[in-house]
Length: 157
Image (cartoon, rainbow, N blue to C red; front, side, top):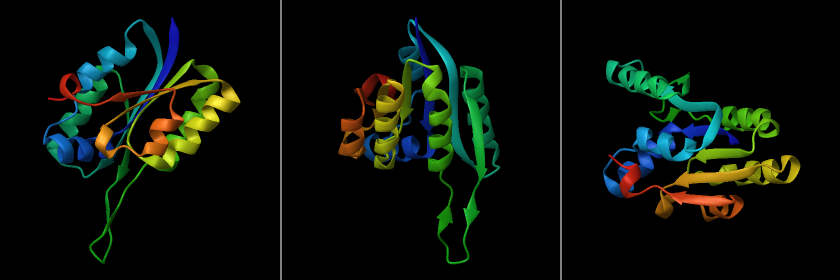
């Protein structure tokens, strides 16, 4: 069986599914699809922690599914803007796991990850899969993946 590592950019998927479909991502359906006939070596969900109970309940669901949830605090700047992304953390983890698995699964539409996927493929020979909302996924990220899976109907709640 193929060994896979899963990396979910929770904020990106939350906002893109909401913007495009006014619906939520179905993490249970995703897990069933992504892990079918495969061994999951690692699965990370990267999120921003605002500390509210609804969010904590969601994080508990992710853990129950099988994800290791990584949290960063939500930072509100004095000018009203907010900070909180996991691009560097996701990148470091993918680099660590790429030599250990056959497939890297990235759930994000962020084009900043195209270089990362190209590196995983060329240096480690890792197959890369991207799950993203097609209309809101960077074309460069789709092109950098071996396989793009559009988030739509069955992957939405």
